[in-house]
Length: 130
Length: 280
Image 1 (spheres, rainbow over the protein chains, first blue to last red):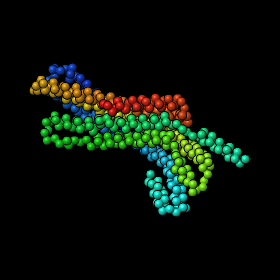
Image 2 (image 1 turned 45 degrees about the vertical axis):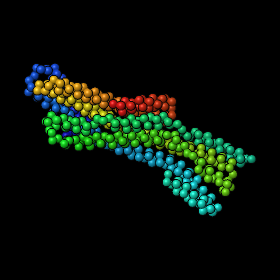
Image 3 (image 1 turned 30 degrees about the vertical axis):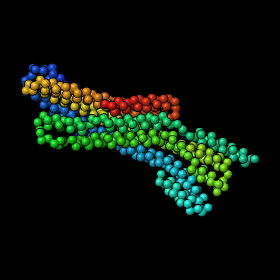
Image 4 (image 1 turned 120 degrees about the horizontal axis):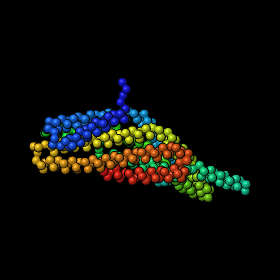
């Protein structure tokens, strides 16, 4: 059996809603002319039509989800990939920072001074923590 | 003297090449992408979903039956799941545009060589300051050129590969929005039905029936305001689709004046739509 598309489900739901609206308009147009039982039947018919439209709108949404699953998955993969590229570009600055800290450390080690060495190591650790 | 002249020639050539390769100022792409991300993210603030409609209907049914023992046990789980799925899919679109905005941001590759040059300027290393400055300038320009080239390549690749799935997803979001609009229409019809039932009930007093009509007018006002927001969101989604399509169609001239104008215009329109969606 052919599956209903999201568009078809919405179209049918739209027709049910329009029909329920038309019944409401009819109730106003015949205000005071219909019996209580007739009014109740019309009101019940409206309620039933609106419940059907609810089910169809839910079906429409579920069908949309299935219809866009594949393109959405591709878009998600691309977005994540580009996130990695951004990280690569941000890493360039990190490499520059780390290189600067390493040179500082090298200079501190070449001319031994415990305070300088500790400061340089702290700064280097700080660069990795960024 | 000759080697120095050669070094200078190379310096000029490298700088010129680097300048040509650079792709500075993709700000209009970033601006558009930021606007698109904001637009889709804002739609979450529209407080009308299939779940709210389901709960409303369920409560009305309980009220009609004068069910005093009603504890909110409504069969709305499927509607809630559907709304969650929609929100998750919108989040993917927001992520895509946020990443595109960040990649198109010129500041991303505005690297500072200062930590390196100041470390090298340490007098204990005995490196001549003049050579350092020249070297730093060349490194900075070449680094910029290559990272800009990398950035441009990936902006172009991203737009090119993402356009087809993005258009399909945007179409899905528009369809979802149309479902919400229909749901809202159904809620309006239901509110009128309920009011007609009350107003036509002779057992009730005139003031009770009149109060019911007043409630309807208020509810209609609220629903019309939400409908306005949903229509604006739909408009925004169309503009996002149009802007991305324009980018894809002009991939190799993303910096061209007409493309820039179109995107700046669309960004402005998206910016104007956001408060219309949030202030419903």
